[in-house]
Image 1 (cartoon, rainbow, N blue to C red):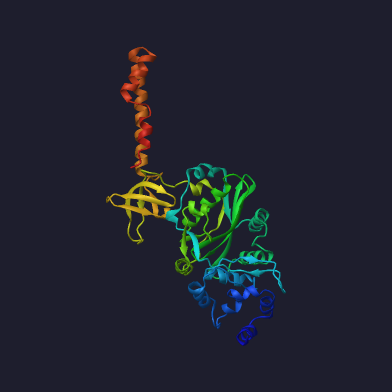
Image 2 (image 1 turned 120 degrees about the vertical axis):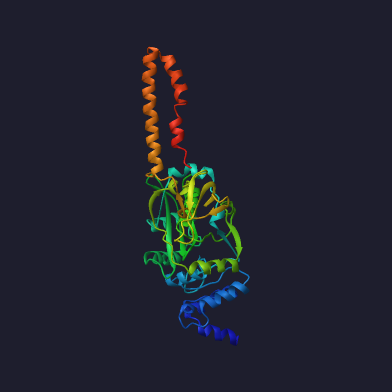
Length: 390
């Protein structure tokens, strides 16, 4: 009892009252904004390290919904949720969740179904252009659930202030025509991105939104995609459950790097989802050193976000970032100019031969066609040559 009184003496009045009215809160760790102060003892980082190793459950609790505190929790690896109503001076409390297993996507494992690629052109996608409306759509589809008013207000403040430190709040919007048919809320920490909640109200819109977002994250340089709790549809996309300490180690690496830009004006989803390169295409793969020209080779296959390239040196390389691949088929290349001249020459030659045969045969249509086919081969030959890209 003396120890309990000593602990309560250090707490805020609101926290003390909440504990007295909700005894079950004494069974889970308490996190406070004071732990984020420069001279805090213990710090939020130190408490998180202890929780990650010793705490066998997922949830902690707090009475604060300040946007800066939410950002600090995201930075440490917690996924903020809200709970209520509770007894006491506040209707809701914050339940930061540090999953024992976190479901994450490594982009080389991302699975893109053909059906999604086929339907992508029917939708447009954008980011950070309609945050409040996405929030409203999530609440309309799922109810408050864990998105209670205090945490929604905190998310909105974090979004509209442009972020805190390495943390940014985001929204994703998917349109069919002028109708908002899918979207989600999420946040980024350095080079990691975490999905919080989403909605869909049209066939295939949710699938297109997930895959387009995953590939966009990959294109913008994010290291992994955090999906929170593992679920079957997430595993079907290629996500895997990783232990808590492994997740925190990956997050620590990602958050120490510059913030990735996720801004995207309204764009047709097919531009993101459909592969930029196809099998047989001759490319140059950039070297890690800017001073080196890289290696040339041919695309063998594309799988999700990864391109398998067979280099001219006979080695095979998996290239994850398409912006490291340069297409050697240049629209203004000298080879194409030569090919255009050759095609024109063949066409001109064909017309001259046609006139000569017509004059010689007396204008016979049947002979003209057969002789033309014999002299020039298939009429699509120039087209075949124009499509030969190596």
